[in-house]
Amino acid sequence: MRILLHIDDIEAWRDALAERLPEAEIVTADDPAEQRRDADYLAVWKPSETLLREQTRARGIVNLGAGVDALLNNPALPKGVPIVKLRDAGMSELIGDYVRYGVLHFQRDFDRYRRQQTRHEWREHGVVEKRDWPVGVLGLGAIGSKVAAMVAADGFPVHGWSRSPKSFDGITCHHGDAGLTELLGQVRTLVLLLPGTSATRHIIDAEALAKLPEGASLINPGRGSLIDEAALLESLGEGVNEGRLRGVLLDAFPEEPLPEDSPLWSHPRIWVTPHMAGPTPLGEAVDQVAEAIRAFEAGEELETVDPEAGY
Image (cartoon, rainbow, N blue to C red; front, side, top):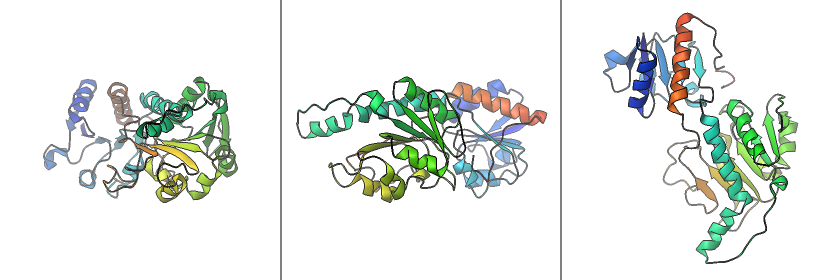
């Protein structure tokens, strides 16, 4: 059994996977082409077209992350090969911490105090109580639902949104177009944890941003395609003076790394992080990869990605 492995920190992953699947031959992009081609299984994160074109007999693919848009959009993706993705694998707690930091950043006015520091301005802002700071979470999948629960446990009212009806204790759930409009109109911080699909592309556009309350904030640890960048910049306004949108914490972008000439880098009310909100923890993730490959080998039924839906 040959497994093509492709991800950052490749040596640690290779060693961990070899320990769990000692019977497997594990190859990487660094191996000679004749050795790495025609693998039985692919365990990959954002593989190149070259790597995928070499795979003509793959029987299963494990996407080494929660987002599958990069894989599905790769023109060399083998047709008809079942794809499974990691189920959380510890990412939700890391993303939850990122979101909780972001919510507090705006709720406790750290953005305003930072700008005041540059002006040597000593001025205290009154604290808005947590119960008066509703947070919206778009996307209630395995990660989004856990992140929503973490924010709710901190004492914030949480509204969640999904395409179809869902129900979670402690979360006010909305769904469909009407539900999205209802949610946007009442949250002070909006968190984006939707998959990147054709249906969610630019779901946060000028119309959606206009529905947010004046002074709302936005956190995106999800997918870069969710936001219309031009509309975002327009809503933020110019300079340090707050526009309709108060501030934004961005971790995902349509093009990564973020180009050096992107206006997002220098805007005083945008905080840019390099897609670090939810790195894949090695231990549990490798366990899931080994479990999936054993299931493929045994012909067991697995929950697979729907390429048409995009998740």
